[in-house]
Length: 293
Ligand code: NAD
Image (cartoon, rainbow, N blue to C red; front, side, top):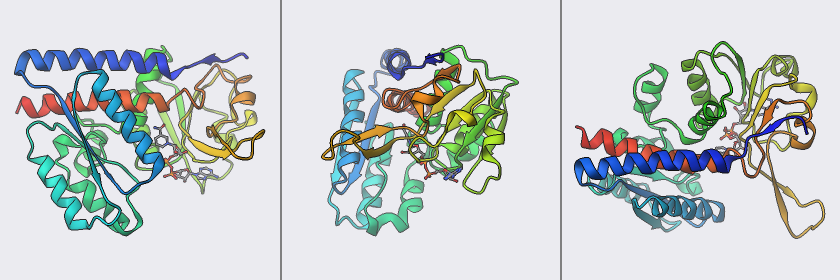
């Protein structure tokens, strides 16, 4: 293996420690403990695991944590009423609605996310926070792309003046990643499903971010030797040795690409671990913004 392995656990620990210290400052300054509420509607097993991990993250740092479990049959009005209640609860500084919503509520997803007070929007999906990020103002920033940037910085991988290529243009990962890289003075190219000659572009990247949602999509011929490769993808594929199980793989063909890249994140054990650490950071930032008002 030639690439340096960027293991998420080390960076996640550093980012959680940072959040813990900031939380302590808030407790000392305001006598208030940061609080996070996570709303989950329905019984999606993957979402339940994510929500449990978020609660665990809060407990580890001594935050106040509230899990709001709502049935699959929840109506738009009931969900909006719950968000409204949490918007007005002074114990809660961060509100997160776990996605995806059940099918019947999906047409209201934007309305639901926009109902969250922008100061409590720890996912950073509210248009106010999106606009603040794009215009370079202080914002609550989506956790996964922000975690990737913080990891690059902590790993000492230079960003300024480098060519960063992001594959994927989603609101959750690709687009915020573009703005975060730009704000650090990278030259950024965004690729997507209609991009022509993708490999020709990705091969120019000093930093290559894959957020595609397709297993082992990035192959060695798409990677410039020595590039930093950040794999955001989480894909479940049938287990090669056991048909009763599945296996997690990223959007990068890790085994092959690690022979070409200069640094690479594994899946599992890479970027995924940073998301919760950044959620803890956002909860503290949100608390600070509200308490300073
Ligand atoms: P998405 O489906 O919303 O977006 C995928 C993007 O990939 C689209 O913009 C599309 O244009 C692009 N794309 C699809 N096919 C392509 C092709 N052939 N060539 C080039 N581009 C192509 O997905 P998302 O929400 O951005 O998530 C991407 C991946 O990251 C998924 O695997 C998801 O599970 C994972 N993810 C992980 C975390 C985490 O680690 N915590 C968080 C969010 C998403």
